[in-house]
Length: 411
Image (cartoon, rainbow, N blue to C red; front, side, top):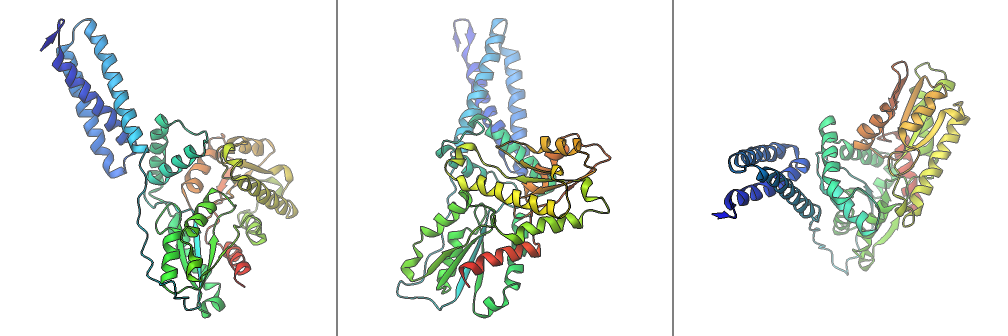
């Protein structure tokens, strides 16, 4: 078939192939590691075919027109697939409530320990849900066409450390919490672990506790601050309307004002001195940070992160560390960034630097990869040792802090 001097069939073929190349490129960027090679192979094969067909079919000015058309259709395929991919919503079914309204339970207390959660292997879904939340709140973030590259970087970080230990560490922490509360366990208290970004979720665990006869529930958010995360978990459980079943539901506080948690930073710093004089040690307390638009919605998060880190800083100063050698920085969204704060510590004469992911409860991509990498990018000389102090983890003082918050709501 010819139209005004050129054959239309090659144009149709390269247009279709180019659309598929755009789509397969998108999926190569965001796919789980085991699926990457499928989309990469498809992209390479179709790209080779497009080049071959173009070379055989196009002459003179048609070559430039062909390059333009190929580029345009690849872009259309990429953007269309990106839009569909990012529009996904996570569908999950809650367990059935088997307890009748007349059943008031057996009198025991259920502690719903809930925290952020992080899939052990790479998954884009938690971040897609976060994108929806950011967009719904009108928060400025990475423009949608570039979010695939953000997810691609996340996948690379997972591959770098071989997966996330976050959820498993919380399993250890809740076991330590149970062991630290023998009197409560003797009275029948049961403990349930839940995650926002992994299964099981807080509402699913609340239903399980309800079905198992709980008459009282203490919701224990293992977070530093009151934030979008604590609100999300609280809303999940509130939607169940557990009071209909006669359940006394109590929300414990997050840990931003816990003296025990604050003291942990001093003890951990002293344990890692290794003979270095405290006056030569630089300490970086890294907060998570949130977009400024969210400060208007969840004002407590930034305020409490700042108050917590400033209190830790004062404790460190009282313990002998120099004020100018203790800096606060943010992981994302806010200033000062990690690199700038590290450079300040170096200019102040630090011979050893402790980097604390101050707001992170358990090992994660943030604490194990992103924060340490940002610190190293500051051009630290080989003579200066930079120690990543890690997330809070299964530390006795962390467990004590969580226990104290629970006991405040359930003496």
